[in-house]
Picture 1 (cartoon, rainbow, N blue to C red):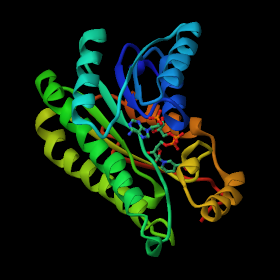
Picture 2: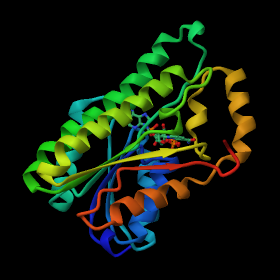
Picture 3: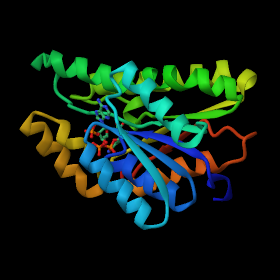
Picture 4: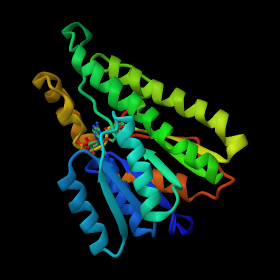
Length: 246
Ligand code: NDP
């Protein structure tokens, strides 16, 4: 993983799950990490763990729903390390429910975090990356970005949107500005994501499937692979799911 060395990488949603695993794996391979999420204590602990293992990382409390917070995050990364090589738009929530339950507040939250959060990330770093004439934006979609199941309509809609935005970004920016765009689409992964489901019955259904879930490090390895490829190679899309799931 030679190309990861000294790359400046921002990860949103770095306080648990896939974001935490990616931060630790990338730092182990010599990247300089900027971690963002709302839970400050968790971020501080992860930064301490990375530093104790000999890596380099900093954090700033960030709500991806706020464009101002995302712009502060980008400025913070520039102040710390002088440039931004990669943004991993990883923060996400999945409060699945049946449409007829009309959990409209949760629909709004999913749209805000999963779609607007990604757009805010792009808005915060794109001008910087265009000026640098290099950069890489990695967006977390999902296998739910390809398929819909009962209870997943709104979550799937947000993840379909993430794929559309990432592909648009690739087509507009890769040829002219040298900015790479990658979609990472995990299947069931063992993280705290299922805690965002408010319905006990749907949580119980999800928990039954959890025994098949793969490690967040399997997704972190895919993120590391996409970043590590040489600059003239765009890894556009990776789907990773438990082998046993159809
Ligand atoms: P986790 O719940 O473990 O992590 C989600 C992260 O998002 C947390 O760090 C949380 O931090 C952060 N987050 C949530 N809301 C906000 C916000 N408003 N502002 C900033 N950060 C926020 O779940 P995963 O690691 O599984 O999720 C990571 C990504 O992977 C998500 O986009 C998810 O949709 C996607 N994914 C996950 C799958 C799975 O099976 N686990 C499958 C497919 C895709 P905090 O609460 O501290 O802000």
